[in-house]
Each structure stands twice: as structure tokens, then as C-alpha cells.
Length: 268
Image (cartoon, rainbow, N blue to C red; front, side, top):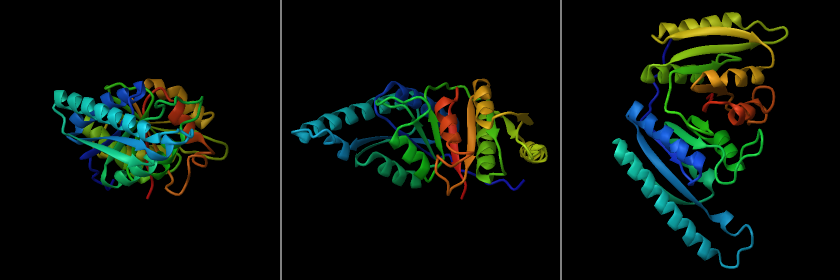
């Protein structure tokens, strides 16, 4: 296969002080050490959100948010220093998803929690996380909880999404993981030749890989297997929104319900 070299030099890490955000920091620190990357911790003061409840004096809330953000960034920096990880801290003001998507232009990966302080309804992610995933210029690794283990990667395929395949190969090479290429057989469609071809290409790149074709509902199949893997890499159409990818809202269900972190890779 013609392998595209992908950078892992800069990892963007939004933080908000929630438990899941702290778990994301742990994974980001592990990734930074694994890939020798620089971590960019970001806290965004949600300026429009400060007055969404008609606060009499939004200035007071602003200074509270600024103090909180400064403390969270300082704590994240201390954790990075203890690990010996390269890091930067950014305290920004504005609309969170707009700030993060703009910063993603200069990043190689973003690691973010999908629950945050506002929590998460069953099967749904917050509007900020959704807009970041839809609009990010770099891959977005999402998680609800974190583990530093990275030994087995699941790569679901419904077409040959080259950026997702390349990303999976580069991740596996840098971390020494194996890849399972998965497709779900649907009526009138036999994905076995495609799965065999992709698996052979990945093995040709020097990565341990196997391919499997199962029957059933694609999302339920992926979710059922997610507990056996440390990361799922999902390739999506650049032009699609989360609601229209993989049979309508499937990617969002995978992100919110999978037992392991999920990285979303957009096609060009």
C-alpha cells in the first residue's frame, strides 16, 4: 500500500475540570509520551454562555471562569511536567467549539471528553462536542473514561476510507498495537473481498492485522465488540454530519455508547 506518513507532533487537549475531562488528560499524557508529541491544554471561557441565564452581573462570572481556567491549566501543566511531557497552555475566550475548531488547523489530534460538566443524555453528546467533531480539521479522539492501555484497535469499514486506514496504520506502528478490520454484511452486499484487501495492505505495512465479516446491525455489532478493544477508529465522509453518517446517527451512537475511546477520522 502507498502509506501516507501522518504527524503526531501536536495534541490538542480541551479541559473543563470534569471527571471525564481529567480521564482524557490521563490518556493525552500517555499519548504524548508514546508519540513524543506536544500537549496543548486549552480552557475556553464561554463568553456567550456567561449571560445565557440573564445574570445581573456577568463580569463576576467571567472572573470566576478565568480563575478556574487558570487553575485547571496550571494543574494540567504540573501533571505534564511530572511525566516529562512537552506542553503548552492556552486560556481562550469566545465560543468553545469555534475556538477549538480553529486551533485544530494546527493540531495533529484532539483528545476530548464527550460528557463534560453538563453530563450526557443517553446516546447523545453535547452541542459543543458535536460541533467540534463535525468541524475539526484534525482527527478527534473521544472518550467517556480512559485507560492508558493501547494494544488492540478496531477499524470498522463500510468503504475504503483511506485517511482512516492510514491513521490506523500509523497509530499501530507507533504504539505496537494490532488492528482488526471489521465489516458487517448486509443484504445484497458482500464486504469480504474489501476486508481481505485492506487487511492484506495493513499487514504489508508491517502491522499485525486480521479481518472479519459479521452479520447483524452494524452499530450493535461494533458496540458489542467495543469492550474487547482499546480504541475504535471510525472513518467518515468529510461532507456528512454526524446525523447522516453510517445509516443516520450511527457514528454518534458509537461515540456515546462504546466501551472504549473512539477516534473519528474525516475523509478529504
